[in-house]
Length: 264
Image 1 (spheres, rainbow, N blue to C red):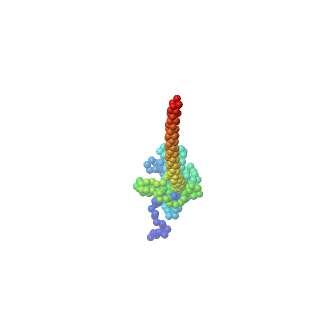
Image 2 (cartoon, helix red, strand yellow; image 1 turned 135 degrees about the horizontal axis):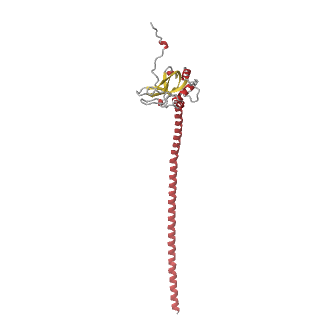
């Protein structure tokens, strides 16, 4: 009767549905194949998660296409010059895993087995709305920009029907850029707040100065009017003073003429 050894077996976790900022993975193997529709040369990589601990043992497959429509089997050297396409990703995977490069893919496929590297794990929704794990770029644990091992933030989790995570970018790098951008935005907000605080003060000050100028103009105008009125009054007084003198002079002249007539 066959025996069962469940003491050695862990429960199935049903795959990974949570994006990871970074995960330490071990390469189970890589095999050469072709895409289903166009028959483009492609390599299928299978890895097993070592860390984070809660996801240990979960396996993920990744598909790296190196062929193109012009060169489906990637037989020409120029097809391999696409650094941001499949060839570039494949070379990075091999070197960051610490395996030697070779023109013979059988050699490097064997050389990478059991080797480890760190990679972010993105979750994308397929056409059926089911979450699918996808591997990001490969990193050595000693790389300065190696992503931190752990789960991603809630904002990095995908919603149904939408793919989450940027191609060719690590979650750690995105996290760092978002943090820096957030700091810059805070600085801008603080600067704007300071400007806003200064504007009312300046406006109030300007208004007060305008009011003071208006008051000075009013006072000056009143003073000018008073001065003008005073001058007019003085002129009237002078006229009044001159009138009696003129009349008195005429009376005196008339009396003198009368006296002269009498003498004659």
